Length: 340
Image 1 (cartoon, rainbow, N blue to C red):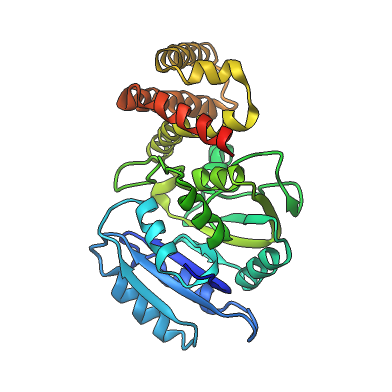
Image 2 (cartoon, rainbow, N blue to C red; image 1 turned 60 degrees about the vertical axis):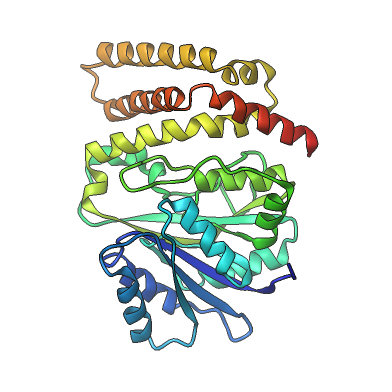
């Protein structure tokens, strides 16, 4: 495959996003990129039933912009499959993942180009999400905002090599070359992302880990910021609990990547043995349940303690779902690391 032209492809993966998408597209149409930078917008409609594609085309036409917008259908459900299709059909070297509820600041696309064009060792760059709530959130929501891809990802702009897998997927930009090299090398992707009611995320973190295993560096850019629109139902306690279980489930795979980087032989031995991993998680569930019971009178961080317990429950469920397949994942990544 020939080298791609330098430019930015903005990919928006959508599932029933007719209500969220217009504001996202308005902010994209207001980007200040300059006449020397080519860019495009690719909408991936992932099994929507609410007319998302029609709304997207109407809204983009209403913005009277010359930036091309393409809409493609991905019939296979799941954020990872939609994202993969978007990457494959995009035409530029720099790929920017913009969720359908992300409102990018006016210099975001331009800054992505400048960071990746300036730093040839950087495979991926992320910015800062700022929560934009539909309604006033409860006070306890601040304890778990990081799960909504908001807040700084580093103390300052620059390389963030000391914390593998540390960039979240919202607003993430990377080189197409980095993805292609990983695929050509035979990397497997284990996480499919959210599918309908399935709340297991992590496909974006897995991609970042793979970039680093391939030798690319990460960059955090403080001047790249976006508003993350968070509707009322996403700050309900039931939603946050389910999301915590989803993070716990994805940790079964992401732990393998993390331990490959840390090279902690003891932890790798324990977590790569399904039965040992199950016993460790069961113990954590018992200890956290006991801790929550003893600290009932103490209101401070009560919700956070509850979410930690939900996280371990999600991890245990995923271990039983995968059974001994989790051992295969650990052994595969250890082999890949040795090859690298």
